[in-house]
Length: 255
Image 1 (spheres, rainbow, N blue to C red):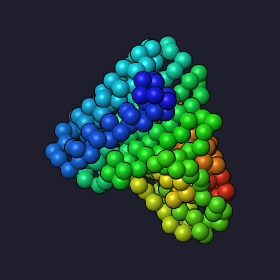
Image 2 (image 1 turned 90 degrees about the vertical axis):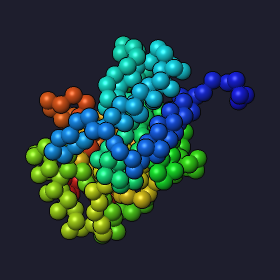
Image 3 (image 1 turned 120 degrees about the horizontal axis):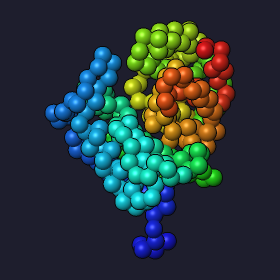
Image 4 (image 1 turned 120 degrees about the vertical axis):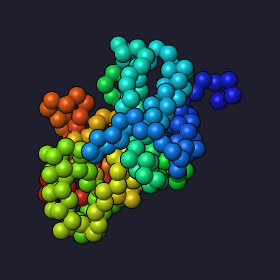
């Protein structure tokens, strides 16, 4: 490919994720402006700045596409190609100075996820995948773990933000902790799925999560040999109950 060749969709998504990651890294540890605060969540001005930057990169190169993100929509919403963006997955971690957050970008074409990028700017790790190609971490092919025994597994359980989701998550955490080697509540669904894809975690469970948190991770996990089951949450647009795993741990036993 010459320098004049257009970027592939995966290259474009990676470029956008790295640009947004630099913005986040440059602002990490500074005075973050809070746009909105609720009991279990925070929205920062930087969330919107990050999404605006990603939007400019993606739609600047693909002006006929749609973009659907945590901070709103852009582009041609009737287009068959839709970028799905979480500009900071792990905003609360970012705000409290915990260096565990990421940028997540996926491309959905005619309803199918075909590209996924998850970028951790603090560690310098970038997971990439395009349909039909290997899942990669910093360019190296990855696969899910081979662990099939609960006693050797490490699981990530999310607890959501409302009372029902918290109750479900805490009960699942209790049940799983009796059998697993270790449990984690990490604060970034996208990174949790990236960790499954490269074998660091064995499963991730949450009763309600948004599409932009998991779209890129779904393709990563499935391509790396794992399994992702999504169930739509009634009454909540593009919210899902998720069970993602290496495909070997019998996660259904703790649901």
